[in-house]
Each structure stands twice: as C-alpha cells, then as structure tokens.
Length: 157
Image (cartoon, rainbow, N blue to C red; front, side, top):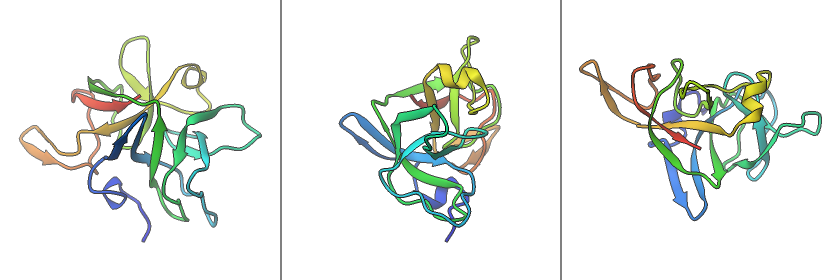
C-alpha cells in the first residue's frame, strides 16, 4: 500500500525520541520504480521533500536518514533526524503538512525548504512534526490536514 498521507506511515507524527535522534514522518516525491533503503542518507529535494543523496549534488544533509524503506508511490516515509530537538509553537509562512522540510526565515517564520532556494541550504532544515490532532475554528483536524499560518506548530530542528 502506497503511503500517500502521513497517517499511513505511523499513527503519530513522531514515532521515537531516542538518545540524540528523533524518528518522524517526512515527505518525499514519488521516486518511481526504485527503493530507498533504510540507512541511506538524504538531501533536500523540491518543495520540502527529501530525496536520496547523490554525489551530483553537494547538499547532503548528514543528519537525516531513511528508517524504513521507501518504495514506489510512497509520498511520506519514516526518517531519522540526528541531533534533533522539538521547537514548539512555531509559525509557518505557508500551509504545509506533517513531514514537510522547512527553514527559518529572518522574519522568524518557517517556510518551505527547496534545493533550488539558496537560503534553504544555508541554514538548518527542520521538519513539521505536529501537533497530530488539533482544533482549528471549532473543527477537529488530523495529522493529514495542512497547517495554516496562524496555528502554532512543532518543528523538529
């Protein structure tokens, strides 16, 4: 079954908080007829997604790796961020989902990270990681719903 929403990866945005690492849901593009294996290093791709490190690109992020294999049609996966911490009540510059790679702007908001945006490569990239459930405008939202720019979110940085 293809993991096309965060909730298909795990029932909570964060699976494990270990000594010096956090396992959490991350976003990836459809990788086609290939597999990313557990333990492979990741780098920043397009639109807040993470892709397997290639030697063609110098932007390897040594602190993010694959935890569970990613296969064809998966759009979300379980990743591990080493040296991570959780920042609470952060503000987003746009509407993003759990697992999206973001970076902090000079204005103090987190915006989508992209390999073609130089600022994304000059600062530490975080991952939107929660909260999994929240009430917005009197409506119960789940981890598959996008966050608005007015909601306080958790960032794994």
